[in-house]
Length: 213
Image 1 (cartoon, rainbow, N blue to C red):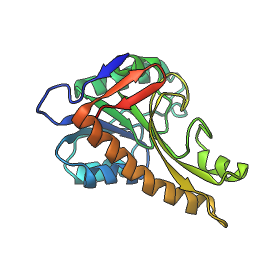
Image 2: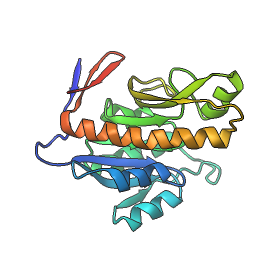
Image 3: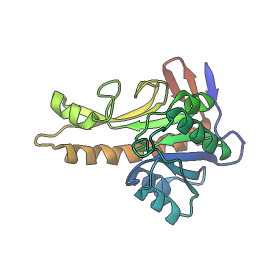
Image 4: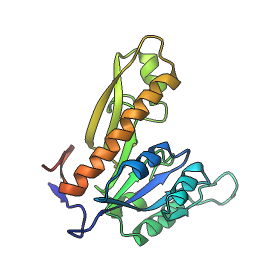
């Protein structure tokens, strides 16, 4: 059983790094809705993206650890993970949030922060892991899907679940319409999880995670 105390320094805000790759709408919800118990100390990306612009506009420090194997013949993914891990460590985060970060993290990143990396996923895990969760849910014909916040482990969307909220699938839903409703719930869920974590931390017991009361 592991107790994750957050923040690590009592009386200080929860120190959060957000990793992202795209538009940054989930990041924007954190910027707009998190209270002073949580501080986004940095926003990092694997490529130039709108999310970095959003962070900069909010006065948050940004960094880029570029992932471009197609452009570099001798690209070393292990080295990329090590550079990312070093950059993350320099900010002394309590929690790292993967918010639309489109890279699978390697052990060089996961091991130093194990139990403290949180991911959001647009489905009710363990159903529909991977990058096409919304399409997969529609194709399968489920009546209910949703959003999951889970800890990152060595698999793909396989880590212990922290929180989930359902989203019904409506007649006539498209990928875009369903995903938009999931994203609305996802934004609320990650803010709630971070606020509760900042107040009380959480307990990890095997595959079970409880945010402490």
